[in-house]
Length: 375
Length: 119
Image (tube, rainbow over all chains, first blue to last red; front, side, top):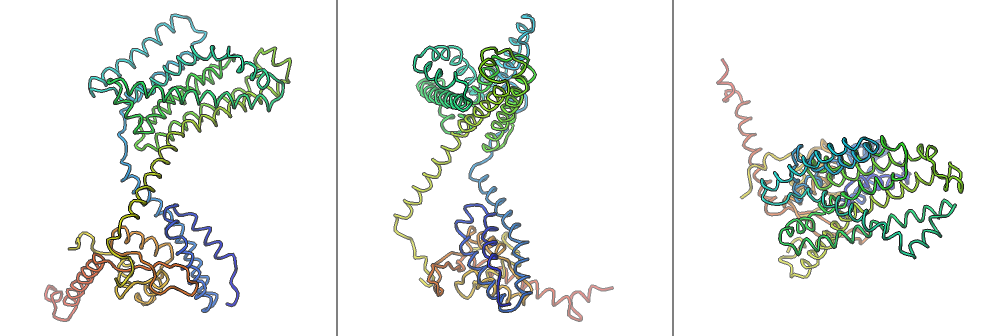
């Protein structure tokens, strides 16, 4: 066999991409070189050996890559031991704020007696379980962070947000971007306001943690939130139901959609607490939030024509309005994905820096023995 | 003192360790040697070979060193060599196989232990 298809080494290189990154960094170049040698030798012996070699590699390499992924996963599990799974009844209590928000969304037109009975009883149930847990553990359980987020950001939404509306430069920015009939400008305003809101929430979180650090009662909780990035994500997630309800604020007929969306958010917390790994916890929250926001984006598209927004409908066709509402929701979703993933990304970066620093220190130390064979 | 819980070794592991017993060797040489040692019965793919080498490195049975005989491309190549622990484990495994072989031969020989047990 004189000629070899030139794409074979390239195809092999592509197959190597199936391996975990850490494995590839060490062995990929060597494996490629071994394959090239083996291919060149097989070529001397004819077409059949080449075919045998290629089919063996094609069958075994993906399987070997899968084994390496599993091995990597097991090693990660050893270095990051699994987190304790929270019992179902406590997980339900932790999702309490979300049930209260559902009640708020569903029972908007319900008689006041229904709201007066249901919401306080639900709150009483959650607070009782919280108290039982505090007595049992002799410390504030970490899942209370979702309550902290819920009330802290709820207070911010209710008290500070109307004040922000009165600031003149924000008002003029809104007039030039948000209050126009251009879809792109309005979407830019939407993105800008989402980014600003999350920046404020992150600053508030930092300030809140600083404050908690100064209070001896809450110092443990603040320390835990700084040590475990998933606690910080849970704290930030507490803000999401409020933001969700605010996004649906001016809508009619939204109750079935808003309550389903908030139920998805609640399920996110439930699965967060039932997950055995920090990665699984983040995934649960991101999945819950994504489901909720996609429900909102799709439902807005269908709800907009049912609304009585004379001001906007006089400026723009209904079709433009429904696209704007859906797309701006998806923009909020993207910003929220970034904000909720930020603690995990920062923690990963911090771990990488620590490993690099450790490696640098190890290289500076005199070697115990030479690595060269024969020495 | 090697841990006997590591035994028995898989055939691939035994052949790789055996291939490294005379001295350091690089990936392709190990692959060819394993093929020869097994009388052309075991043909390792690169995936199986490097998966096994990775595991052996993690266990400390082999070491990764600079290739003592760089190839014509003058690119830095890596070779693998048996560590002291790896050598002890290989010896343990070969002793185990030898002892098994002796017992098996005794049983199979005419008038051996196996034959005396026959009714």
